[in-house]
Length: 260
Image (cartoon, rainbow, N blue to C red; front, side, top):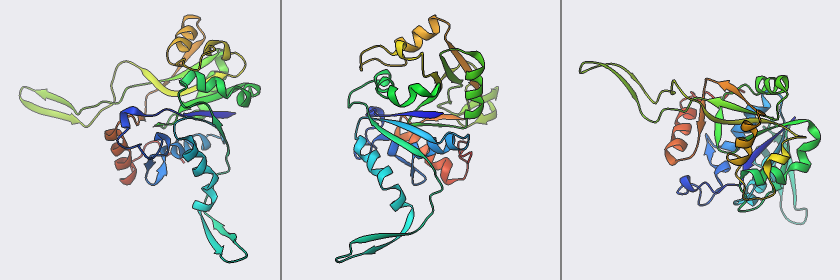
């Protein structure tokens, strides 16, 4: 099974950090966030990826084209030989990565539709965004999708709290939780499995269609969308504060999404 990763958005809410790099390449612990997402799939046996490129997509292509060189010891023979000798490589990733141009201004449904030829023969395929990490069990998510026979499965998760939660008795603080997970209500947790034969009619014909609007709304209205509940870690990286949070968790060795 392949995983499609949406990597084409401009990330306007985190623009102060991604003027140079597209958001999927913003580093957590020295590696792009999209690399962390792919590692999370790999640990569950998914090693074929289709990256939907748009904004500054050539930089994502450059990263993967040079991946081996950036993770290996090299000897560069200058002069007439002009050869590069790879001495050893620390990269343990055996991935097949398709880098697909899906348009500078396309919305999410348009980007998915643009890679149809790469995934429609596979039965089902995974889908996620290139800017959020989770410890969701991808293997269980896929099995759940295959068990119900619907067109689409969305991971339903709790929104991360934005502020510290304070419990009091009178004026005394009895408990303080730093940015707790919300205890009620679910949100789109960003990890989907879609039927590669039946999803296309829901995406429409316009590249300006947002997957999160009409397609998912129509799937829900036709009872073709089910939710896989995930009550553990999920964190998008939409703002500079969230970028710093993820790096702090990684630096402290407390990254819940590191399941590999």
